Image (cartoon, rainbow, N blue to C red):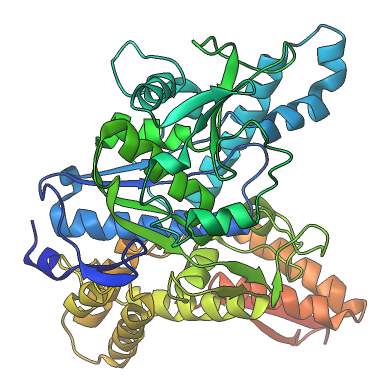
Length: 483
C-alpha cells in the first residue's frame, strides 16, 4: 500500500462533505458502480460515469495495489424497456411462433451489451473486476452468492416488506431514516405521490421489489407468484454477492441518488441489519449538449457509438480518447456542457501532450507525484492536467543529451490516465485517399469540407503541405508526421 493512500479524500454524497478515505480493509478496497440498462446503445451521458470511475479505479489500484481492489459494475438485462424493445424489433417473429420473447430479449441485450463493451474500451476504460448481469442473480444460486428472491424474503421476514396488489413492496415507514442520502423525508414524497394510482400501498413512497408477470412477459417462479424484480433490488443483490453487506465506495450518476440509490440503501440495510450499505457515495454531475439538455425531441441525443463511428456531431467522428479527455477536463461533480468546441480543445491538448511524450524513448517508472496528489484530492483532474501541460512544456524545451525526464514522466502519466502513448502506425493508403478527397473538395470549391479533412489529419498527427508541381504547375499536397 502506498503512503499516498493516506491522503486520498473523496466527496461523500451521504455526508455532503469531502472526507479522508479510510477503507474497511486496506488489503481489499471494494467499489460498486451502477452500469447500463442494455435496451439500447449507451448514450454519451452513460460515458461519464464509466470514465470517471475508471480513473478512480486506476487511482485506487495505484495507491493500494492492483490485486487489492475489486471493482464491480453491473449490467441491467431485465427491465420493461428491454421487453418493449424486444417486442418492437422482433414482434413479427414472436407472433409467428418463430421466436420466444425470452430469446428476443436475449438478442437485444447481447447486442447492446456487446456494443457497450466496445464503446467503453474505445473510451480507454479498464474492464471491471466483475460485471454481473441482473438475470443471473434473480433466483437462489448454486454458489450461494446473494440473490434477489432471498433478499426480498429477508425483508418480508424482518417486517420491511409486504405483499399487496400482486406486488411485493418495500415499507418505507419501517425505516426511520429513509431518505438520508437524498435528504428527502416521507412527508415530502407523500405530497407528490399519486395515491389514487397506488391505492394498494401502505405509504405513497413505498416501492416495488417484485411484480407479477403475465404469460407474455419474462418471469421467474417465486413464493409470491411468477414475476420479475423491481429496478432497485438487483444492485442490492449483486453488490452483496461480490463485495459483502457493507463495502467502501458506491458510485453512479447524480440522477441515481433518488430513487435508485436511496432505495438500494433501504433494501440492503434493512435486509442485512447494517448501519450503512457503503461508506462513501460518489456521484458525477449532469451532462448537457451544446448548452441544452440532451433529448431525442431536441435532436441532440447521441450514442457513444455515433460519436465514435458516425459524422453526426460536428460533421466528423471523434477518437475515444478525445471523448475521454473532454469528459475529464470538467471536475466529475460539476455539470458538463458537451460541445464541439470542448472536443476540439481536448483534441488539441492531447495532441500537444503526445508530441511531447514521444520525445522520450520509454515511460518513467514512477508517476508524477503532484499529479497523483491532485487526483487524490477528490479526483481533481483539472489540477492534474495542469501538471501534464507543464511537463509537456518542459519536455519540448529540453535540450540536453540524456533521457528527457519530463517527457518520460508525461508518457507514464498519459498511460496511467488511459491514453495511448507511442507513435501510431501510419496508414499511408488512408492518408493518400484523404488527400485525394480533399483535392476533389478544393476543385469543387468546398473549402469548409476541405479544411475539415486537413484538421482531421492534423488531429492524427499528419500535417499537410500544399504546393505547386514545378513541371505542370498543378496543385500537389505532401504530408509529414508531426509528433
